[in-house]
Image (cartoon, rainbow, N blue to C red; front, side, top):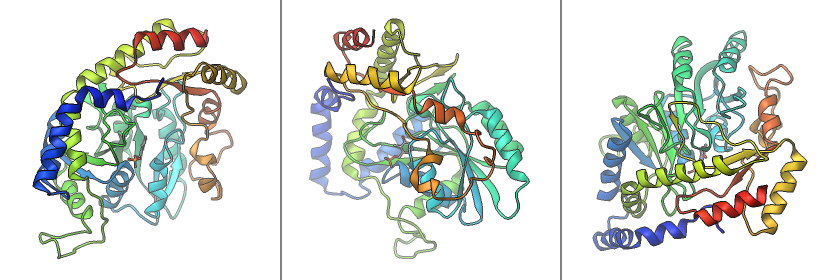
Length: 374
Ligand SMILES: *Cc1c(COP(=O)(O)O)cnc(C)c1O
């Protein structure tokens, strides 16, 4: 059994993907070929944003967004400690300071109440300016954007949506990838909308931000490619990956529906573990199906039973970011000087584990997993 079965997906789409790949090999425009721009347009239409600017990966998409907002040394950015390392890594990478604010214990996403507390605590601090918030759509569930957007407006902060896991999620009829001032995503193969290598994108309605990011992704180019007007990066989506994504986008809605079917079957049958919570009016893209045990030892038992039966499982995420060695070396993080301010992330990271989740998971496989956990 596969944790994420990319081979099953390729078998379904083989003829169409192969044709698209061969057409790129025939025209030979490997860098910024026509498929790149076609995909950017299609994805913008699909998500309902004005601009999609593709780039090398989801980490670069976050970095490009921070660079476009002029965030760097002397600035601070608030984010969640319960996410993939890249979300906070990029804040430090541009020279700014990551500030962690704890999650809601049911959704695992940034808690708006605690976010406002973190902002208020921070404001008493001198010298460093709070500039932005990066909210994450963890495991495919969009964060609480109506509350978070309101808070960011009130305190004059830029809001970035890290939708690397969020594509395919929704709040009412609004798609993940369209919240905040800027959204970013990743097309890493295991993400809900993945390609067959690395890829990413920035999504925004703002014309000026879009123009700056188009420049930043090609060495800070001006109107002419060899006129460099700012310090940028080399971060582009390969034409071959864009060609693959064009075909995957056609079946994306169906795949999200299949993922939701799998999630519903899990929810109806699982016992002994807490199942994920999805608030009313929210749709998850189920980037991960993450369940919770009562304690660390019980998790160890569940996972070893699964392993013995040939069922893969994984821990996302076992170490909250403020406890990662790279950040732990730093002194206290601003806004979280109180001991225990991040205790929900610390507690949950010891208890969660994720079950196989992909659109092609069969009823037999789901049954086997559920029976094993019983
Ligand atoms: C995967 C991921 C990223 C980074 O994407 P890459 O394409 O691997 O660079 C950033 N944030 C989150 C939440 C992710 O899951």
